[in-house]
Length: 118
Image (cartoon, rainbow, N blue to C red; front, side):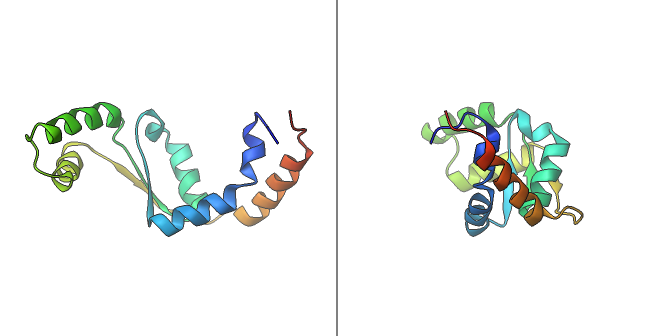
């Protein structure tokens, strides 16, 4: 089944959240999307995980620090993480109550079944 819309994939939401919670206690959002406060808070609320947003410049920093790591200017991946954490501001979003995400997921699953496959 092929479906070009996001609604078709929302039915997979519970499985994705379950896998994410097994991997981490928090969700890290980087690059341009990390500047979207509404999306960050909705992600925290929907997953029940803390969201750490930023840095916006993650792609550039990733390329730069990997080159420095490869040429020996930075000793280890832990040093890379420490350097980035000290160099860039991040913002934390904690989950809040208010939306019945389980009920919403049931509605989304229903809607996704109504969308014809292509």
